[in-house]
Each structure stands twice: as structure tokens, then as C-alpha cells.
Figure 1: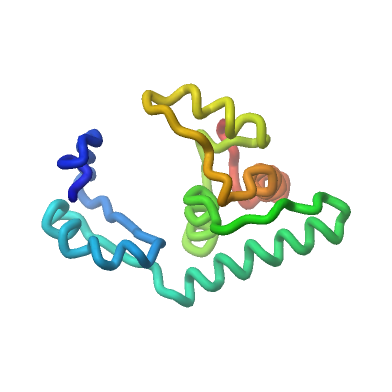
Figure 2 (figure 1 turned 90 degrees about the horizontal axis):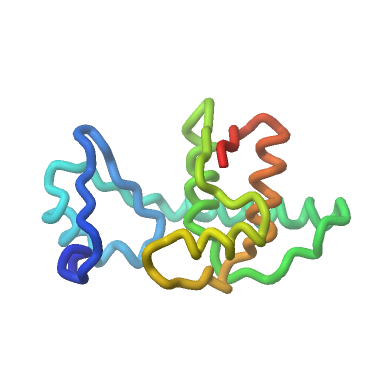
Length: 146
């Protein structure tokens, strides 16, 4: 079922825009998405790229814990935002982030700014994601505009 058929707002990519999918469960949807976005290039990250992201995230968590930060809570998956940041770090010289939560409490506060009722996923470690963004900003890797 397409996003439009499911009642979600229609998304129209800009000319020259590409869509990158990181979740391999998306594979089964690519033919339908290819039809829906016929003039847009669609990409699926390789398993190696995903392995690097998960490994890098795990290493960051280990390092933070060794520095006395935490211990971080258990997580099931990386958030979409962390996938995007780690992906951008491999491709871009400059990364400007807007709209990311910089504290765990902001994660829950920002939910109320949306039109739909939702609760932040318990599958992610929001505290550590916010800490990681602040550390990457302090290191000059990303510019935070939140």
C-alpha cells in the first residue's frame, strides 16, 4: 500500500533528488516505490554500510561508557536520525543538522509539536543519540542548528 493510499501526506521529491533506504525490509517495497517515484533515483544501503553504522555506533557507546558516561540503556535499533548522521559522515565534508533533539527530554517534548499522536520508540537509546550529536558538534563533525 502506498503512502498516499494509506492516507499519509503525498511526498513529491524535487528534481534531481534521490531517496536512500537503509532498512532492508524495504526491499520488497522497492518495485512499488519505483513505480510511485518513477523519476526519482532509489538506493538501498549495502549490508556492509549498515554493518559499519551499527559497529560505529556500538564503539561510540563503549567509548562513552569507558569515559564514565552512562551506562547507555539497551537499544534494539539505531534511530533513523542516527542512520542519517552516520551515512552523511561517510559522504559529506560538512554536515548541518536541523530539528534533532539534543537532550533526551527534547525527544519527548517534540512529539507534541506534530500533527499525529505518537510516542518515541523504546527501541532506541534517545539519551545516547542526543549525547552523540553533542559530541560530534563539539568535535566539529556536525553543525547543530536546533
